[in-house]
Amino acid sequence: IAPQYARAKRDMGSLLMSIPHIGDKVYKTASHLKDGVRSVLVPGSLFEEMGFHYIGPLDGHNIALMEEVFKSAKEMEGPVLIHIHTVKGKGYQPAEQAPEKFHGVGCFDPSTGKSAKKAGCAPSYTAVFSEALIELAKDRPDILAITAAMPSGTGLKAFGKAYPKRFFDVGIAEEHAMTLAAGMAAGGMHPVIALYSTFAQRAYDQLIHDVCLQNLPVTLCLDRAGLVGEDGPTHHGVFDLSYLRQMPNMCVMAPKDEEELRHMLATAIAIPGPAAVRYPRGAGLGVALTDSFEKLPVGKAEVLQEGGSIAFLAVGTMVEQVKEAAAILAEEGIEAAVVNMRFIKPLDTALIDAMAKTKKLIITAEENVLAGGFGSAVAEYLADSGQQVPLVRFGIPDRFIEQGTRKELLSLCGLQPEQMAECVRERLSHLAPEA
Image (tube, rainbow, N blue to C red; front, side, top):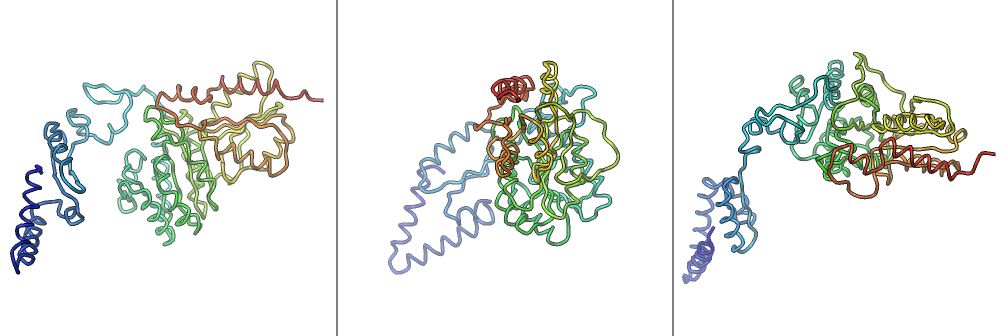
């Protein structure tokens, strides 16, 4: 890979080509011979055929070697492909032995590598989803599970062990996962695709053209929806409600807790078309889990608290937040209705109509960008139906959110109960008094 070698290679080619009458044939014969030997001995022959200078494979942990390789590569003419081999978690034995576990990890004991989870911690949404899908698949042989290089992160590793012939990991290829699911659904199966919300964006086109356009029964399960804490702006799943509700035939749900996640999964696989369920990272609320599944009435909300002159309409994780905000306001004599909307699409428009007629302020809350999300859907409906009730929307502002603890990020976005209560209090102070 040294510059001297590259120059010598070019000079030798020129020398062979300069031989009178036979130079061209000699050069081609030598090239074919070199290519034949290289294809057997060197793993990069494919890249060489594509016009790349191939270097490798190399030990990526040898820093001195890598520095020399990069210096030499800069001197080479044309495109260069450097093939590097590294070991995930190199230098820390627990991480080398369990690389998937340490891909994204919380607090752990450095001496053992064991997670420092609190005793009695509620199961994660991911674990609840995994167990529910395995249960549902017992009576539904048409259910298949697909993921894109995240079998552990999405909880599908357990499904793969239970039903190895019904599990497909397509690697880092979300686009292919979606088209594969469409083909399976067209063939009479019901595929369930589990992806991180932020990575599902890669399959936007395939979801529209291959799944929704043909109204195929594909269930999309979006893990890590909303703010994901220390993983930062590349992993916050805060756009899915906005792009999913654009798609015809799509049904979109968000559970308020882990028990409702089970029922939404059962509902999704019963729908004869595309459906999406989005749920957050981490532990659930610790609610009791039943042994049965309930199919929810599609497009119908759940009223958790009635009365008052204002109404909180929330989806997913924000249901708990607005319940607390309503409790804060109640201490000040401001009573509020609280609704778990459940469905972002289709909306429970009958409930919105009722709230618009009886409330002087409607508040929406979601852990999704405000642009085009759940709050936008409510605003659009109110505007299209000619209803004049004031509206306050809580959600992720129009900027990329940095990393931090979930509590810090919720505060940064104004989504803590105290912040929402203060905003509602301020808005109410500017409304005209009732006649």
